[in-house]
Image (cartoon, rainbow, N blue to C red; front, side, top):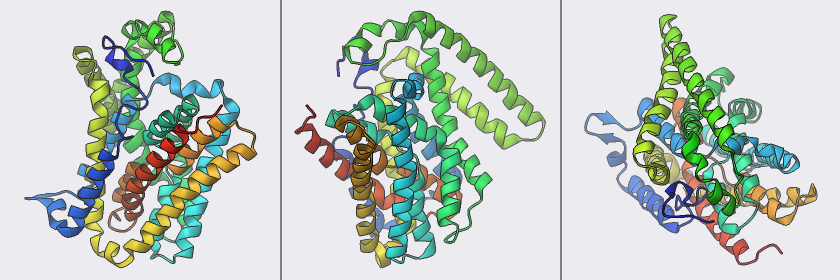
Length: 396
């Protein structure tokens, strides 16, 4: 993908986060080992309880905001360019992994809350790691990015419904509460990041030539100016709504809405001073994922000692089934090989941070959260191996 030193914003927008390197996986593995050996270090820092749901929520929001800075508003409209491929990708994503997760949970006879965690991992949206792997594999990157964006947008509806339907016998699932948690945990921070994208305006228009060279869609200056004006009006309107929510007593709703808008505006101000912030943000996402994984492992250490090996095997099968069924069903539905490879990554790679955050919000981090803690490092290793295998065997 073409980049220039004068425009760091273009620095491999889909892949430079370095999730493609095994270094990140080694960091996670080391942190997990530490959490298993000395869990107390990862549970409390002095008087601070690292399992506190507000601290955990803040970390997951940081991960999602960083993810949002690697997306653009146009990613959500990619369905217009390939509606069939996007539809197949979304259908496979929200059917294969939840159903396979349920089957594995019953096959291995895990305790109810651990079983619910496996279904939860399968019911979450995909994350940016799938885009990274599609980029490395040189498969249909545009399709991968669009499916990630739209699966994230659909998560407040799809994830609670799938959990209620498939995991309702394992744990109590409050549909409205889970949907609200996903909105404030995922959509609010990503919305703030997309507000920043909309405010880039004319400055981003100067990048059109490089965007075309990189194979990305060109956006006209006139359209960017309209988007910038619309973003300003939206920000003002959202802040007014947040203020009214405070006045009417809906403090939490108003607080999260204001947080998203003010976070996007503050980040945009930082970006104007130093555009490389968009390149640095994935490192914050990595830090957040490491925090969430280690705290989850430390909290559930005793459970992992009892069922750890079985859970690892189950999640390896879960991940592998996602790749295999995602690719096979895509080909069965008539997608080309390049698109099928992208769908395989979208199906097999889940948003582990979102799953861990929801487990924390449910107050069941040490049980429901274990599936996400085990699945995330497995998917990064397997995704890297598969992406490099396909890279050496390009589609003609």
